Amino acid sequence: RFHSPRCAPAVQAKRRAHGARPPPPPRRALLSPLRGRPHGAQARPVTLLRRRPRAAALPARRTPAPPPALRDLLRRRPPPSPPGTAPLPPTPRPLIPHVISPSDSPAVPSQPPTSFRSFAVEDRPGEQWVRLRAARRGPGAGEEAIKIDATLFDGVAELPPDASLFNRVEALEQGPRLHLSLIVEVARADRVLGFICSAWPDNLTVRHVLTLRGAGAATDDRGARDFTKLEPAEREAVKKFLQEREVDAELAEFLHDYVANKEKMEMLRWLKTVESFVEK
Image (cartoon, rainbow, N blue to C red; front, side):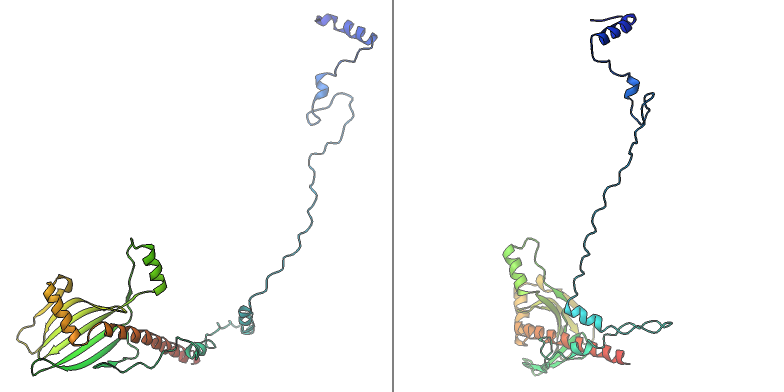
């Protein structure tokens, strides 16, 4: 039942007489304590921020001990230099003798051979190449002088992008297939034939054929031809010419072993030079 505003006081008095519940407080009394308080109400303390309880301190982590090799290295550090002087950097002198003379290491080079078949081998210490020489009597009355210059390892074979998984695994098991270059010169009288070859561990291939005329000739005629562009009969003649002079796959295998040993010798020679420099 609805009553007009004028009847509101009478209705409230009638409700009080019959024991009815009192009306709700005015809206102003429901305001938040932060915005205001009703008239005559007792102020309550309002807690705006509460400090969270402090977590218990975590136990300190123990630093793992360094490995024995690192501990030995730290113990060998030089003592601190006196104030006013710059500390000297540690020298590799204690490590060099161990690298130079590892008696039980497979990296120790062996004494290089001085000959192979009919070739005399010139080691040429300190150089990045090796030379072989041989003399052979030609089909006529003249003699031939054969000279071979071989570089150290200058390349490695790469698998084609479309190689199968089997070929890739096989290449990893066999290791890198190293390459070295050869320059073969066969001199007879005033003519010189040159051959630029590639030596792999198990074969030898010809890349270019050069025709050189000596200084005693009337003209200086030089020519170079790509071996792959020769006629099949010409390629077979070149292969036979080199095989008769012992330039073949066996020579390539020998040079690979020789060059691998020479690289070890050159490395040890360089380390000895460094050691003598450090001692000074």
